[in-house]
Length: 240
Image (cartoon, rainbow, N blue to C red; front, side, top):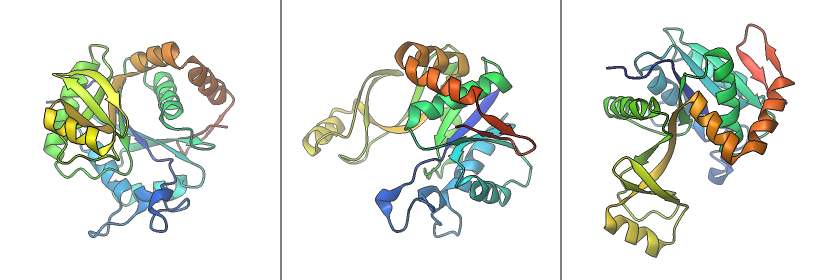
């Protein structure tokens, strides 16, 4: 059952991914790494988003160097012709500006009641049915004005991940990349999840939170979008 109204998947694909150099590098970042089946992570993410009920359009935040490579990858796996749009960042500025740009774009094109599903371009999720169920649950919470983050049940005391301390559906706190001792403690407690970096919220909710907690970021992105050009016919908004 589709519980999301006006659901817009937003794929964040602007990072260089240089930690895995030379396999992943600035002009060929991790989302474009080809896996054993011959397909890279980016089209897998696109297909996962396109398979969600009710999705008519997918927005990707990337940059000028990668946009045409991205469009080529999508063209190979988009036989149904899902509508695509692109926001081009002049340079990567972490997640908040990308979220702000996506939310402002969606507000303009879909309205403040649209729901954003924010996805990293370099995730591998093989269980589509379970993913769809989780998205539907997130949509129910987002419809109530909540900001939703997806947690992953940890299987080991990983120190390279952020953690969420949770109580039911409520986030108590976030912990960034703990020590091994702390990660072991988190795993034993059963109260912590890995922070996946997948988010779901209504456009008006995320703009409200950005206005309160990161007003400078929101204002800067608003100014940039206001001065930016939309490339006609290509669905590309170039932010300068």
